[in-house]
Image 1: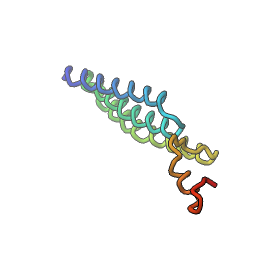
Image 2 (image 1 turned 30 degrees about the vertical axis):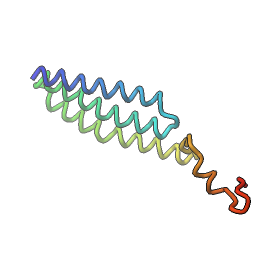
Image 3 (image 1 turned 120 degrees about the horizontal axis):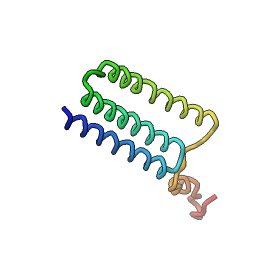
Image 4 (image 1 turned 180 degrees about the horizontal axis):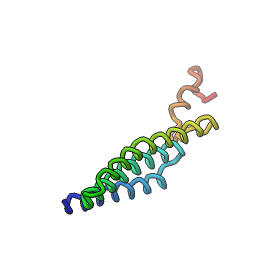
Length: 112
């Protein structure tokens, strides 16, 4: 049981590290929010479940905590994403060639 708990805590730590890395590497608020939400939800759940394997007497409290985390984290992320959408924060697109192709005039092949 201790080995399973340690492995789950390690997996959770890896998820949390990758989430932090994703927050720094993503270009806009929506991608950062997605990276942070998925990583913290899965990472925290795995770490908490690992603690549950290490301390079996706390299993009821740990399950309640996992359920709460499973509901609250995606809900808060959705609220943040909606607030950014209502403030007209748009996604960042690095490659805008598709939009440029739509603006080409077919007569002389110049961008309008």
